[in-house]
Length: 316
Image (cartoon, rainbow, N blue to C red):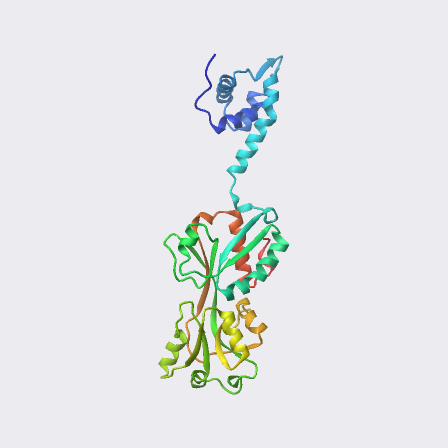
C-alpha cells in the first residue's frame, strides 16, 4: 500500500471539487482554466492520495465511486472556506460586525464623537460597541500593542510605522457665558488679555499659543486655573466670568461637533482678534489594521461624524 502524498496543497482540494462537480476531466479542466492533460495528471495524483479511483468510466461518461460521493459536499465546503480565507476583507457587511472598538481621545473629542458613532452603529452596525479611553502620554505603544484601535485628536506624537489621517482643521474661539462683559462691544486683544482665563493642559502648562500671540502685542493674560479636560474648563467658564478656548469650525465651514458641548452649556463663542495657528484633528492607527474591513468601517464612521457629512457620502 502506498503512503499518502507528502506534498498536499490547496490546489488539490480545488481540483477535487471541480472533478466531483463536473464528473468530467475535460469540463473540470475548462472550469479551472487548465488543460485536460494537466487535469488527468491531477486526477491520478488524487487517486494516489485518497487510494480510491474517485471517477470511473461507465459507457460514454464517468461516474463517482461511493468514496467520491461521500467526499463531494466536504470538498465543496473546503473550497468555500478557502475562498473566504483568501477574499479581501474590505467588503465586510457592517450589519454582520460583532466587535468592540477602543478609541483614545480627549474628553471633548469623546463627547463629540460618541453620539454620532453610536447613532451610526445603531443604524448600520448594531453589533458594534465603543470604548473611549482618556488620553495617555504616548499613544504609539498602545496602538502597536493593540490596546487601542484609534487615537483621535491633535496627533503630535507618532511612531514611524503609525498611519495618520488628517480629518478636519479648526480654529480656536473664546468661550464665555451669556452676558459676559466681553460679549458687549468690540473684542480687542487688550480686552481679551484683561479677562480671567482657564486653560486646558494635560501637563499642567499655564501658557500656550494664545499667550504667544498676546506677547506679540505686548500683552499677557491672567490664567487663574489649569484643568486637564475641556469639559471641566467649559463648565467653569459657564458658571462665571472666566474665558476658555473652544475648537470651532473655520469660517464658511459647517459647525463642528467639537463645539456642541460649549453650546449645550450656554457658552457664546467669540472670534479671537489675533492670528492663532489652526488646530488639525486627525486619527492614527497601526498599519496592521489598514486593510481590516471592520476597522475601515470605524475610520469611515469617524470621518463622517467629525466632518458632519450626510448619507450622500455612501453606505456604511
